[in-house]
Image (tube, rainbow, N blue to C red; front, side, top):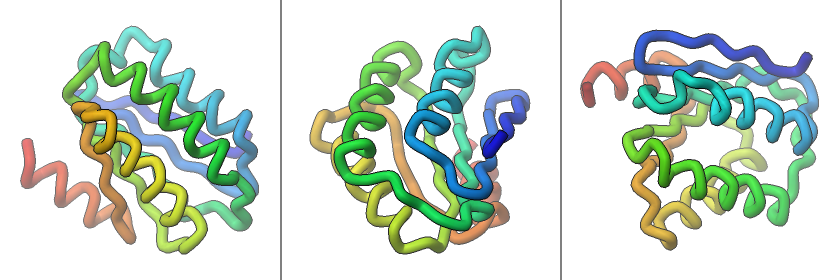
Length: 126
């Protein structure tokens, strides 16, 4: 499986590796969104540092954002933190993030270069 999910107190951490497909990304999202723990999480970390090739396009990114924007109506208190240095992934996260802002979704979407910086952000914003 190209991703793993780890649940913590108020957080979920997902790490991707290899060449994830859009279907696998949706499966990962569904794993979080359909969990009873979804209602209480505050931080959702998506670690993309293990991805070796990225082929998800703009249209697929927009679909993913729309799906998550709908979920943001249920739990309005999430910081979704992506970890990557890959320019293609960062470009898609920017599209994703802009849609959240345009629709006034309550989720905050941020990108970090490494897990330490994301964890520091969490620590400083609790």
